[in-house]
Image (cartoon, rainbow, N blue to C red; front, side, top):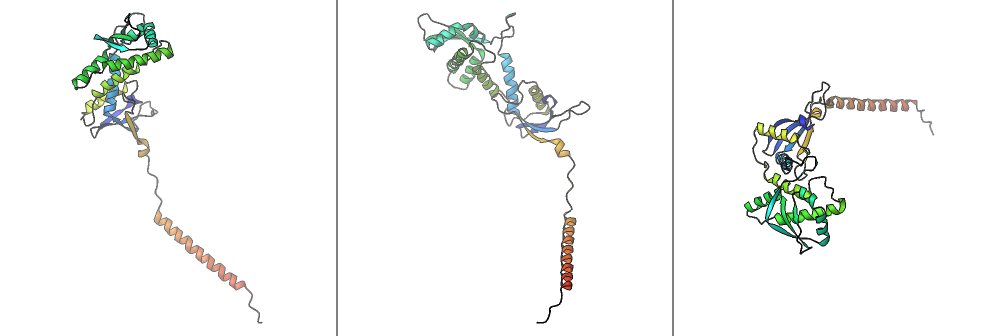
Length: 270
């Protein structure tokens, strides 16, 4: 359906008006019948997020492993993260799984309540660089702490099965996607609008932005607007007909009254 979208024009430097087909014509060709407004920021955010997710994984996976590994970056000096004994035990049992997620954890011999993180997902370091560039405080340690908590909870409930991109990583990538996306009031040429909609049509989740909000809004079904207008009633004619019926009713009542009076016997004298 979304692959059939036809770009009309940019609206108010915020949206892109498009026609989308919700049905297929008898000849097999799709005709655009649904008018939609695409949020240009949300659309570009979605496109960027899905590309960032692809770029976050190593291109060359170990042969025959069937595993996808997140790109990682060395942290020097290693981050010191406080954990409970149970958390430390779980992290030791599944540290190989965590390496696939870009997390390298070192377990000091002299402490069960402390772990050292020597590698983190690359996107965490990129997020920190962006924050420091804006004059903000470092964020890597707090993100890693959240990441470890998330993974410990998953290990407790799933026994190490990891099927999707970790939520903490996805949130970091969503923030990156947002900050680099087209903004409201950014003018787009027809060609830029077309390329954005085309890129959106190839996304896995084209109908929502990186944060889960809708990326487009349906406005109207053009087919309904193009249908023949209903014939309006002729009010003048109806008014005359009503008056005629009214007069006919009065005349009928008058004749009935006269006939009733004629049939009444004369009054007898007292």
